[in-house]
Amino acid sequence: AVREAAECLTRGGLLILPTDTVYGLAADPRVPGAEAGLYEAKRRPAEKPIPRLAYDARQVSGSGAALGGIGGRLAARYWPGPLTLVLDVPGGTCGFRVPDHGACLAVLRAVGTPLAVTSANLSGAPAARSAQDAVRQLGEQVELALDAGPAPGGVPSSVVRGKQRSDSVTIPVGTTLREAEMQLIQATLNHTRGEKETAANILGIASRTIYRKMKEPEEE
Image 1 (spheres, rainbow, N blue to C red):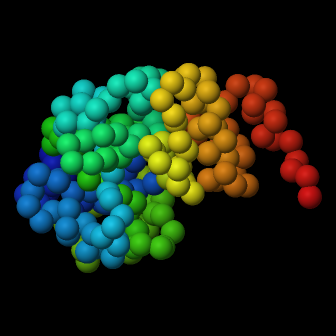
Image 2: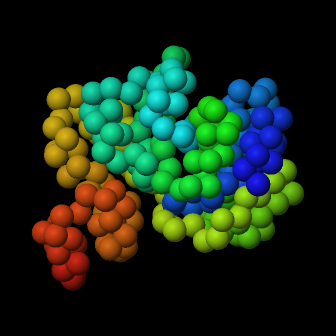
């Protein structure tokens, strides 16, 4: 199945791919037209960039991304996992993540390059937590779906960007790792809203004290 999935991607096909968060729709950005097909299949606005999933940090750096400083330290601590880092690349920026999912990593290793991957749903629709959910939304647009059971995470990854956005957190130059962790916890809480226990664990950095605070009832 992994070999078939890799061959699908390298010839320009779209693949429904399991990850540790939600199911993704993947394309090989090296193939002319493949990433454009991804936009078309999702009906995704052209101004919204598509992040990359990579096998490991070395694959990220090998693609030309500048992985250093606080970004490098966060990657070392939280990859593989549900943390997307927006990094400088030639010509601009791009989001990168190393997923914590065996089947997904096997495909990434077989292809040998970071893949363009976005959630496997039509733009504006709920994220797909199973291959069946993804196929129902995108089935006619994709060549192959890799089914590995329900997605374990159920929510998209947290994002660290260079500029403040409603779904992101700014990590300024000079920020310590601990300060960055606290900002990421707060951003995850804001993003997941009522899902406190998911937020507490999504980055794997919830201490007992933080976890207790997040389980306390909110004031009306």
